[in-house]
Image 1 (cartoon, one colour):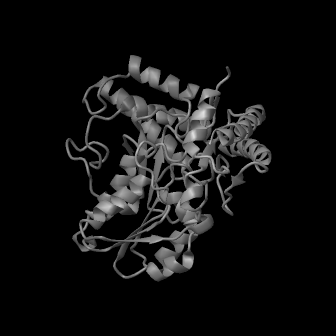
Image 2: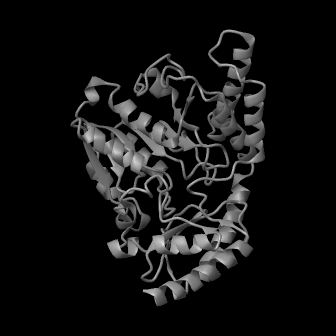
Image 3: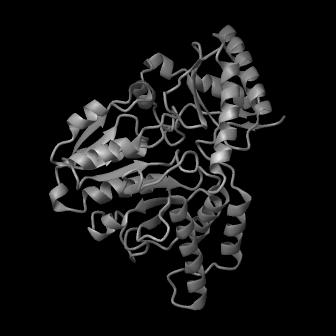
Length: 385
């Protein structure tokens, strides 16, 4: 049975470039990059090269901007929110603005900060559209941080962070802006400078790199003003912002994945879009496709007719087809369908919605098989109800 992997928003297969870079670190350059000898310098050189590759992919090469490696996108998002909130005494009790569709690691960090008496306002994103009118009204003199994701991980909605952050800085020049770009990086064009963005979260395993490596892009202005403080304390690695012996293997693997993707991701995104559109054309008669007006190329949100998403997942899994019911980071927890309900789906429809997520390795032939099996699954599971 040929397996078809359509869960690339959860994680991706490691590419050859990342594997080769990791193997070199494991077998030859295994020294601690903080060690003050040649082997340590050689390992640090590879870490620095990975940072340069990632900065280049964000249009920030040759600047004083920084890439801080973390263990995951989740940690990078925690560092962005908590690190900024705790960096200045004047931020205490101030306001943070996020969207109502953020990933759990942003939403739950915001909830933790609320318990510390920070104010958090969530801007509606019904039908995948960020409510700019509500946002402008929410901007108050005590707002010190705005964090809005670039691409929603469940619906694929693209939020215009350039417009959002430009408006924020026009009204509040000192406000700090952050985007969770985990689902956007290497899928759509992304430039912190053009987007008026101070902090950007990205993740390795979403772009064919290894798990265990995330990163936070930090603008030189934030570094200069000391507007972020560490959430992990120790020996002061990663510019003093993320202590602990560096995971050189995964960080350099991350760089390898970026190097392989950065010059061709636009063409790959076009190929992914073709497969996505083909699959949607096959599904449109049997299920409802939830289409935001602006969306990333790789995510399909599909509401089934009275079939619970987890039931369909198990059915497809037996056929060797792998999709998801939403964010893998919260799939094993009690689901509240917060993001899909924010999109505008009813609780019932949210419970019947699957996510199909593609990469450049997927084909129209796979899409054909997937659509056929979903159609057959709807018929079979409806009979069993």
